[in-house]
Image (cartoon, rainbow, N blue to C red):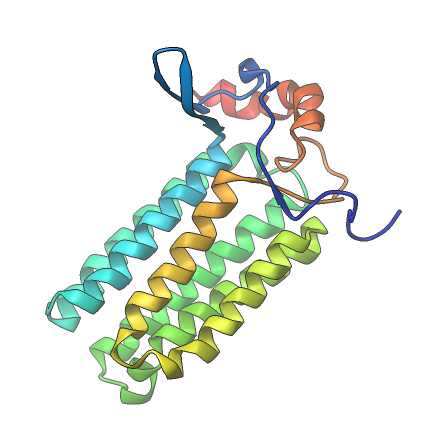
Length: 231
């Protein structure tokens, strides 16, 4: 078996023949105009965690770009928002916490986000100029590291390509002038949104792989049982 599944594209539309009874808490969206379906999709709890982080990223970096708020106030607000996002992500993905490689992936992202938050707050409160000037490449770099780990753990080209995009984002920062925060927010937020919107490739052999919905339909009932018990 090859490390990557090269028989499918890195991103593809989600399948329509999904048994939603196997996915407690999934969002189903269906926009219609008469008999014409304008948009139809679904979002599992893992997808919802991605959408949450996409929104948080855009809000944080867009505010830093466009609103002249005091940096100390921003640090407090974004600390609260990031902690809220981390706790919510933990809650949404707790059904995966006993499954590998998801367990190590979730811990990896939690450590990266909280570590980045700590460095950011310290640089603001203690006025560490060098770090303040490097907040955008810091968060792009942390995201790239997280996606790289996820890509190898999930055997997914999708996440490795996303990691590469974030590394390229660091290089682009020197060409965007005063728009570094907006650029960072777009790269981070849009990347996470795409992961929630599409199905991604993987050859990871674990129960309830969320990138393979055919496999999920046959195994999700047992896999999602811990979530169903607590809800």
